[in-house]
Image 1 (cartoon, rainbow over the protein chains, first blue to last red):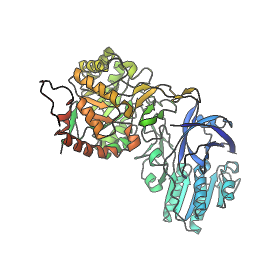
Image 2: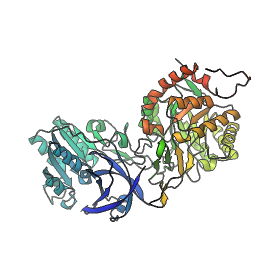
Image 3: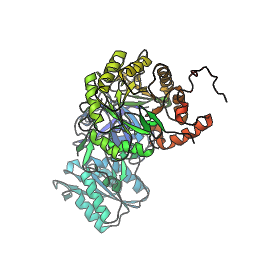
Image 4: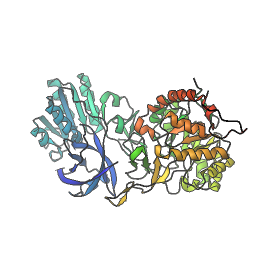
Length: 258
Length: 313
């Protein structure tokens, strides 16, 4: 039960990140993902970075292997799509701090836009290694969101990790929820900062994934399966597992340090 | 209240619903989760001598009618690391059966010994994976091969050995008979049925491996036929597998000759909570059919040995 569709458009977002747009009508909610099949290569879980209407989009960081192959995909190339799968961000909170690290912003952008459209006050802290790797900064500003930036090398915004921005924002404004996606060490730190202020954090996490149906156990994370129980989890549940921020499982199911 | 407790190969099971190998079996916490959900026992992912990543995706395809096609390629952490996962499941109190796959009788025996050392109550031999070169059905499709592997394993371990039989053979019951001759304490039947799905727009099979194994409701009649024939050929207990989603499905397998059943694909559609619901459903169903226990229903659809008439409603 998958659909083969042509890629309608590719957009190079940053030197290492590309967006594929394609027409795939099934309705999707902020936080959900699809399995994208690059024929002859692999099929990977990808969060939807565009989900309004039939023209969906995924935004992928080329980290090696098949994700690198994504950079070579041209408009017109066929891809297989199944889903959407997984749970969603709860759009009820009225004051939301969104914290994106690197390509993690891919899943956060449509969620932040949807929350803002629903009347929530949304602030965004974006972090990246350098200015050129800041994902969706202009898109989020264009949506009317307050966006602040931190870069590891100081080439834009506050120098250093995004957690510095988070600390400042949490100390100057009240928030009902923090949404975050990025490196797990970053998410764990963000969750700890938010907890100190009594603000619940929701993390979108990534694990090796095969079936996406809650069967094969490849994406096991503590007692959870990221494909069916996630990918969005309350941070305290993740922090109660021995793996979050520390271990993942490789394709063979071996626990390995992150 | 019907008695749901049953036993297979001398292993007592609190109910006849086992988690099938390959489902929720890579991590100890998942095995523990299936046990806590209510499974009568849990069977590990098939473990080999070395870690295996399995095939690239797509490894799975849902077909119409709830059928599923997969070729995972026996991914597993390998016997060196996997005992830590079994330990987590055992600490949760789970009745754990270890599944292993090998390419030769000697490899099976070694792996069975290693997994027996972890404290599992029995070892299930994967003689039936339909899509792994050099393993599974490739070594388990002839009676001679099955008997040789069983003899090697039974000579190497003290725990009971269960042979998981392929349906992709001319005479699956002959494989079960060979397992019995080799000393198997029980047989599981069936593994997935060799199958293929094509993506015409891409002019290629859907699964990266090409061929895969079919599971889900579509294969239940095939599994029933195998269990039926095996019941007439062997005296050792049978574990029924294939397309079981409901207590009614399980009853059919019991009446065909199974003493316990395995659930796999149904977890996708119905969630792991299925294991919590099935025992109560089975209890009601057995009572309605006039069976006081699971054991009383085993093989009840076969002609009575003494020629006595079957009870009718």
